[in-house]
Length: 119
Image 1 (cartoon, rainbow, N blue to C red):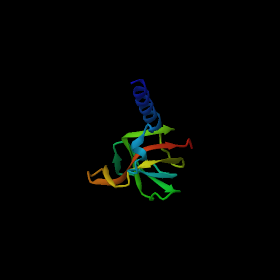
Image 2 (image 1 turned 90 degrees about the vertical axis):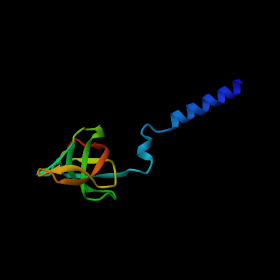
Image 3 (image 1 turned 120 degrees about the horizontal axis):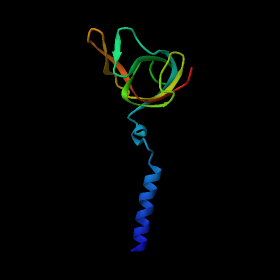
Image 4 (image 1 turned 180 degrees about the vertical axis):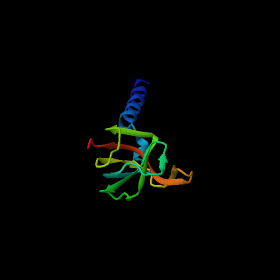
C-alpha cells in the first residue's frame, strides 16, 4: 500500500511540475509574433484595450493590425509605443474587436500575451 501511495504521489508531483503555467499558449492555437512597432493607434479606430497597432514583423507573422484586449497578459514594459520592439502570441484569426467612430466593426488580430522594450 505504501508503494502505491508513493508512486501516486510521484506521478502527481511530476505532472504538476512539468506542465507549463500557461499550457494553453503552447497548444498550437496561438501564433508567435515579433517586430518593431510602427504605430500604436489609428485615427478613427477605437479598441477596448490598446491599438490597433501595426508592427514591422521579423517573424512569419503578417504585417497587419493587432489589438491588445483587456484580457491580454502583459510582461516587461506594459505599454506599446512607436519604435519599441514587441514579442508575443496572437490569435491567427481576424476578429471584429475594434470599431470605427461611425460604429463599423474593425478587424484586427487579438494579442494574447506580449512583452515590449522600453524605447
